Each structure stands twice: as C-alpha cells, then as structure tokens.
Image 1 (cartoon, rainbow, N blue to C red):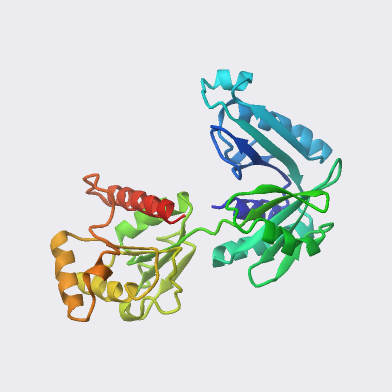
Image 2 (cartoon, helix red, strand yellow):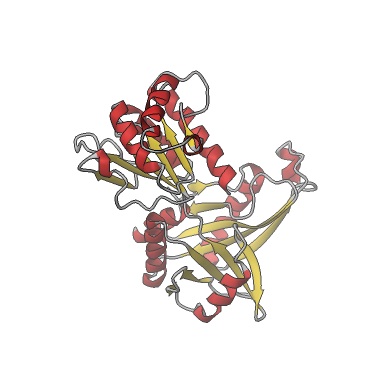
Length: 345
C-alpha cells in the first residue's frame, strides 16, 4: 500500500495523523529525501524514516504535534548526535524532517482521494505543500500533467505551474522558494505497472511480493475461477480476458510497464510474447526452460521477429537462486524486477 493510499484510508475513516517527511538530506543517511512515516494517535506507525533513535525522536514528538496542530522541521546531525552513537552508525549525514498534523476535513479528504485514484490509474502529478513562515496549517495542491488542479483550503493554486517548471527534473520531494514562500514540491511517484499474464500459483506468489516493493499489479487470465479477488487480494486490478490472443488489448505498455508471462502453457506464452514484443514495455519476462524458450523463439522467427527483439526478453525469468517452489520462484522474479526498475530510473 502506498503512503498516499494509507493517508486516504485513515482520513476516510475519520482519523487524524501526524506525517513525518524527510525534506532535506546530505551525506550518508539511513533514508533519503522523500521517505515518510505516519504516526497514528495511538502511537502506531506506518512506514519508516530509517529506524533507530532518529525515528524514535520523531515518534516522541508526535503527541505534541497532535495537540498543537503546529508543524515543525527538525534537524538531525548523524555525525555528532547521540542518535548516531546509539545507532552504531558511521553515516556522517544530516536529515531534516517535517512533522505535521493532517486532520480529516472534507477538502483534505477529497484531495487525498483524488491523488489515490490518480496513483491507481498511473496518472502523474506534482503535489505541493505550502509551508507557513511561522504558525498555521500546511495547505496542499496538485497539478496533473493534463493541467487539471485539485487543492485544499488555503492553497494558492496559481503557483502550481511555476512550481512544476522549477521541479521538472526532480524525482524526490524538494523545498522550493517561490515569491518569498516555501513549498515542499514533490513529483508523484507512480509505481511501475506489473502485468502478470496467467493466474496460477507463481503469479499468486509474485503478486504478494510485488505489492510490498511498490509495483502496481494487474493480473490477467481467461479463467474467472483463477483470476479473482479472493486469489489475488493484493492486485490493483484483475482482468478476466476472453482469450490470450487479445491479452494486451486496452493496456498501454510503455517504459514503466513490466510484462511477466506465466500462463499455463507454452502456446499461451508464445501468444502473449508475440504481443509483448510489439510494445515499448520496459521489461518483458517469460517463465520456462531454455529449451522451451528456444522453441518459442524459433516459431516467432517465422513471424518476422529477430534476435534484437528476443534480446529484450528475460527468459528464463528471474535471478538464478536455484528456486524451486512458487514462493522461491516469486522471490527470484521480483528481485529481477527490482533490478530492472532501478536500471530504468
């Protein structure tokens, strides 16, 4: 579950929260700018900003933020602080953490609902938070790639085009000064879409792990009894298709797409791979032995595909860890997906 989704669900349930965000980072630190943690009123947490005494200090400050409603930016020098010594760390870096209370007002709830829907749809946006000079609440606004804007009470949405231009090359949240005011501007992290073709045991295991590491997962199969919410509760989307020959219809597979072919038979694998090679997907993987791979490639060569096309395919799929069980195979596949995602950034 993403942090935007967590915030949306908590606000929708009428629960206030304290959000801790690393807004500044220099040198070696446990987490980088943009890392977040939610502290709930009962002391429970969601996410992490690195653990250890720094995280403990932030958690200890949360009740005060809940009570006052004021925001605060705290700095931690990991090369000098007691925290660094207690953590047995040699990081030598510096962190700045923004602490703020978010309460479930209708406007704020709608903002995070829209952002959560955008996340699930893969719709990119810039989210900005206006940080007052002294007291006051932090208002937010978001601008989508198509120009649509959504904002909470008190946010001057006219600044969004300028903030988007200033942060066009940023990939993590950054503090920006515009017209004398500070903003935390953050390009939305839209998770890569992982399409699992086939809804068998390996796909089940992959979907459990892929959600944990931040992929938006779509499961596709022609068997409704297999492609179901009961079998894939972690999937963002489940599609029961008429036939694997139309498996990619309605799917816009671009550089942020990861196509994993795990169907129940060689014929279906070949059918899906033929379609996958016609896309701009950043990653294409297919399960199976080298013998199976070579047979499928030979058949596809008759259709005009070349070695250059096949060089895009990870087959046998996954990191070689001598995996045997569905769970082990899933670990090897997701490890390769993580590596591929890192290389595409």
